[in-house]
Amino acid sequence: MNKQREAIIMKTMVVVGAGKLLGLSLAKKFGKNGYHVILISRNPAKLALLQSELNKDNIQSSYFTADMYDLNSLKTSFSEIYQKFGQVNIMEFSPNLGHQNPINVKDLRPENLASSLQGNLLAAIQSVQEVLPSMLRRKKGALLFTTGLSAIYPNPNMADASVAKAALRNYVLNLDQSLKDKNIFVGHISLGVFLKERTRKANDPDSVADRWYQKYVNNEHGEEVYPKGVTQATVIR
Image (cartoon, rainbow, N blue to C red; front, side, top):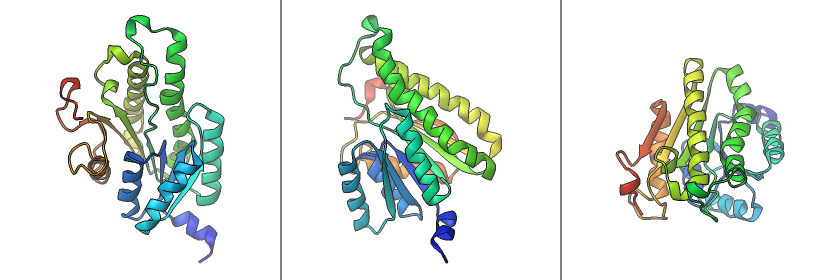
């Protein structure tokens, strides 16, 4: 079997905004279940380390660099992915953009919000547009989105991220309504945890990855908070 044929039949999952916590855990979970995992982030050194970790578990992976604040770089990375692999079966979007300068809603100005909208909402829309046309042609695919709890519950002390993530949530809900009858899975998990490595508790990224895989294979469309029932007042640290 030639390499081109192998690329066509290979199941692929792209993790946009891959990091050492959730991104790595998702890569391991889906990788162990037959997916070639493709990591996208802006730091090639970090991506190389993540791939090294995946190699230890004999998980097939690749990585491409892109900056969530540079939509053209996302376009380029996805173009290279399609040239190499032919298709994307699952795309997961969960960049950790941080809160370097949290802004109270009373002080929020348009210029404060612009960057957060770019990295959250616009990067997500661009990523979807890179994979959705092919999924629609094949009548099969999945779009997964992971956000913080402020996507659902307002956080006035981090208004820039809260407003942007709420906009992303609305976009995801609209996608789900539009694509449900086209055999495209759309899911959203809003995390009420501060992720930490190897806790064996709800805030272990492996636990979140397990939940994502279960949600996907059971075709549980739509959104949920994780853990179930968590609120801003009960966030797990």
